[in-house]
Image 1 (cartoon, helix red, strand yellow):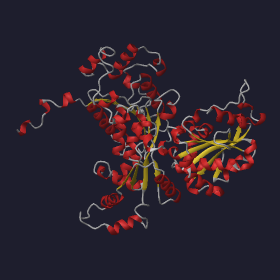
Image 2 (tube, one colour; image 1 turned 180 degrees about the vertical axis):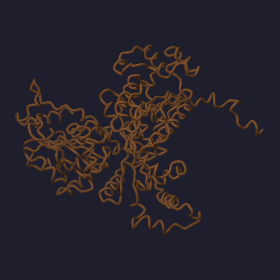
Image 3 (tube, one colour; image 1 turned 60 degrees about the vertical axis):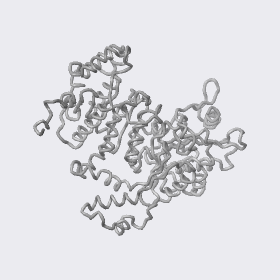
Image 4 (cartoon, helix red, strand yellow; image 1 turned 120 degrees about the horizontal axis):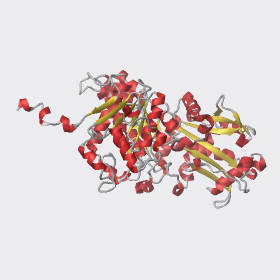
Length: 575
């Protein structure tokens, strides 16, 4: 890394043209956090010789660090992608293309560019984005690869001492005059990659034995291939030939059968559907129809219906309780979940029920053995971030979801970005600062907040969308702000949490546990049954809020100790 950073900085310094790349001690410096977790392609004349050229390819796993995102700002970046009809999860970034002066006549820059673009195509990118200088016609060079300059983004950047513009590449439109070179690079990617040094985020091309050894702890996004599209068909074949697919699961024939019967439920069970299936396929073979989904963490390749048909069948049994128009409304909502222990139950229930089509998940914690008493995961996932686990589970329910994860949890640095554009916030974290900060930001933006306490079935609802001046947590904590909570002692945090949950109403068991924390108990008690109930309660409230149903601010209890008693037994009179 130090070698390629020095190369980049020296080439970008360009004999003094860009002074920002020279440190005071005379070293050429180009340290960027974006280097960590990226693909790095280095060209050398000899295998062990000095690098002559270099290019970086970043995947959506580090999308928050993209240079183009920093250049445009979050809102501008999302607007550019939205205008192009792609999501951040489908967009890769290539950057830092540099070639030694003595090697520029060899065509090395074109080859490196083709390698990065071909790799992005092979890894399932729908689009690529990047910044480009304009002084020496760099942007025109990228245009020859199928990139286009985004209107209105050109401006002078002091660090580069020239105008910089955003370049955008639509994978479906090919790679311009270098299409053949890009295709060759894409097909040769498995041979080019130094497998033992593949970044952890790029596990879709690791050898199976490395994955099975537990190395894959960070990948969480599936790769989607539509064989009816030529570039996807080629990329899928490359994947199948790479040795990275451990299992293929194809039930598309049965899924089409379900699709037809969900549209025509009056058909007799024995009805021959052959003609209807042919009409549904529209001239495509079954292999070409729909979407193939590759899950890097399990190396499974699964064949599913196209997006709309998939969701129509998957939520067909919701009808009668959630009708089609309501289902479409719910799928158009964006939901944030903070704290993916108790929040995992909520997030997975939402995905199952079709509540929300877009999610932001935040948790800094890794899944530990003691979490197995309540979080639905397996021993093979110990050490994996909880947001990663939740995203994987949700994508395995619906691969067409739009999910963004925050593995640092909710922090001052990412709070505004996390809460931005949410329709609902589910808050289930243990940190007092995050609890209050999330509510402060949600209230400022008019976003309703839902919380389940995992004790006595306590459900908390704050309709900041209807009551913009409502006191946080119903006034139970007074006027304290998040900034005042950062330096609390442990006893002060306990007192604050007791105030938040209303100490007079908690269960006797939970009340007794607080005095034992750090003595006989490592943390407060939680049970899987309570967590599962929390997922159901938050889903019920979320559905009401998002569909405009009746759901006022307040605190409510679904206490089994009170609900399941001899006095509430409705079967007594039947015996």
